[in-house]
Image (cartoon, rainbow, N blue to C red):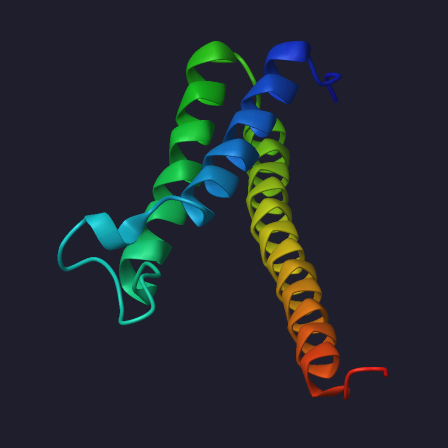
Length: 118
């Protein structure tokens, strides 16, 4: 099987960055696409993700028209893994950030609850 080229890596990185950016896009500014929390609704988010994956695969196919079906399927698999990895990392970072905010809020509440030292 052919080695991965730099352009293939750039395509995969672009897919991951597109999904990462989509995770943090202010969807609340677009009417009808967001829920009460300002997050993109489930169906539009799936459509966005699948379109990012397909766009990356389309670019790959146009750059590598002589690749075999197996090479294309390997790239498509890597495409899906890159997309899923970027999405999972975004959720992990959100969880870490939420945990930090919660700890800071608790420290603030504890500091307010302590009686002043005389």
